[in-house]
Image 1 (cartoon, one colour):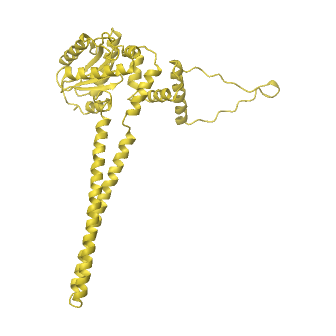
Image 2: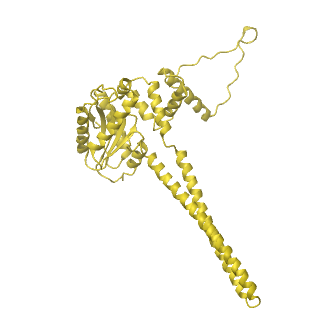
Image 3: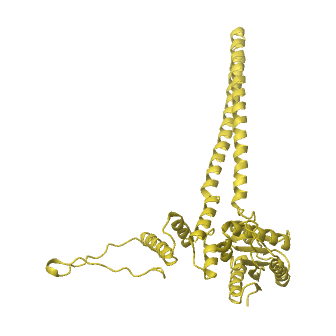
Length: 354
């Protein structure tokens, strides 16, 4: 049972003449079904505990979070780290991101259609080869009997040649059409793959792409660092200025990080207001200095909500940064713990693991 769940009272029908009917043993419930029921209960508990509306949108986001969806869970956890109650507005924004995301089934559909077109090309080429073999066999046969019936052989060869030419033209047209459709599908697949690696709001690499970059680090590589950043009190920006203004802050923050940290550094949106940074080279001290300079640049900026003219106030971020040394997963876990420590220590700071 979830930590938020409340014990459910068990009611019994009174037995005959005021007694209690014997309770039959409950049928065994498969483990898979038990897990599904628990997940359903946990979703309801989460919505009720945070006084969220019982809507399809909130249910979908809660289910995605409790199922560990990487597009949702980090952002919900970030909100909970701020010790702020979850809200219908926050869940609505998360639901919008889910709607815009490139789903695996979309990529699979394009890939399947591309495969089908390639197979069609191969079938056309195969038919073309078979037709050429048939034509060659027919020519050999007519040449062998040419002396017995020269006029008939010539007429049959002429007709056969015309047929082969017509078939070749039809195959060429079909192959050209199939090739064009294949190229179109290939382009769609490449665009979909690029979109699947990008965050649609900021244009930065997303968590999936960042994790791939981290996994590509060679175990023997020395140096480098990985950092996790979280915009401080971002929920207050959304609550005071609205989610559209919050989105503009996220885009501005993404541009600032790219500008301050340089092209060699991988900056990604990890989820919600959390960002991840990969320093592939250099030592931890250099990376921390660079990241801290970006923090100071952000704090020094005076940002105003252009839609209302109201100042956002000081915006800062907290960060945890850890040495890479060829083990990206271990470094990311250490950076996450350091980020948590930065929040506990008062925010607006860059912390390395103890």
